[in-house]
Image (cartoon, rainbow, N blue to C red; front, side, top):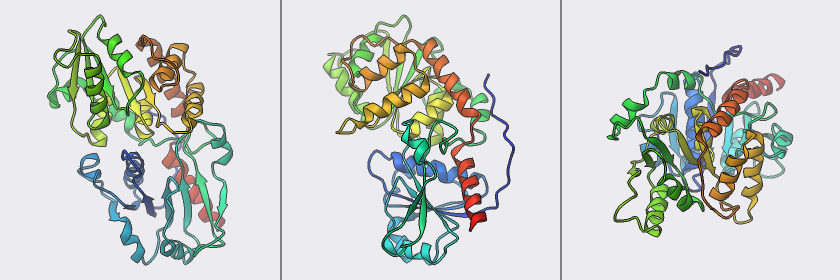
Amino acid sequence: MTSAPKPTIQAHPPLLWDIFCRVIDNHGDLGVCWRLSADLAQRGHQVRLWVDDASALRWMAPLGVQGVHVFDWNDCLALDTVGDVVVEGFGCELPQTVQARIAQRPRAVWLNLEYLSAEEFVERSHGLPSPVMRGAAQGLTKHFFYPGFTPKTGGLLREADVLTRQHAFDPNAWRRSQGLPDDKNALWVSLFCYEPAGLLALLQSLATASRPVRVLATAGRAQQALAHAVQQLGWQDALPDQLHIHPLPYLSQTDYDHLLWSCQLNCVRGEDSLVRALWAGQALVWHIYPQEDKAHHAKLDAFLDWLQAPTSLRDFHHAWNGMSTPKALAVDLKTWQACIQAARERLLVQQSLVEQLLGFVSGQHNSN
């Protein structure tokens, strides 16, 4: 069984972090910024999270986290001073008043946290300075911080105790707590997606499985896509005998991890759920966020290359994401799980994103 890595622990003084986030759609940006904030707080730091729409935190993080304080984005206009570290989540542009406060505190470290990718430019761009050429902060420098899958990138979010918690987890007990049947013989599948091109083909394949299949559909677009697919297949009155669909309510981030740990196949989307599925170590399929210019195709292939995906998993991803014509989408759980677990082992010897952030900030403070 995989165990958590035991890196040399380097103590970092507690800092005040200002993390800024604008919710574009689907709550993915907020999900990442909240996990980052919570991880920092659990390591003894104080975090002010400035967000323009925090409504999703009511279900994403209903209990909050000690040390994380959430503020409305507009309130930052009256900010007296910034913290030790200022983080722009995914390139959200800071108001000029905030930039003026950064200029008044030149030792503050200013970072632009970028989107996750396995593409080659990430290693080249990670950590690069970005001089500010205009506005209230003209003459200052912020730095690009790129999450990634290799040692030359900023790493992935990973709490220090995530694998310890996973090893102690009882999937049967969790499923019972969610009102799900106690079916140890079933193939459990989590579905968190947009509208994947291969959904109909997957359902047809699962309907002919040799054992019961229980699909746990997350709230929102996944349930809507699933309902539409069932209607297209003419199954709205009665599903095939082997196929069972269980709609879920909105889950907290903690329970979403539990969902991934409880399933043998995890269909995930976006950025945060992909990373959580890698830590879960089960077979996964990624529905990458679609872009009109098809730029996501190259991004997906770069991830599959890093993953060292077997042909069956690569073909499935292409069909799932509309890069090829979906046909019969067979699932090879054993091969896919082995691939994901090997990838997880490669990641566990690397520092997490927060560990790297702390090291980077410490280096910047020492150089000022």
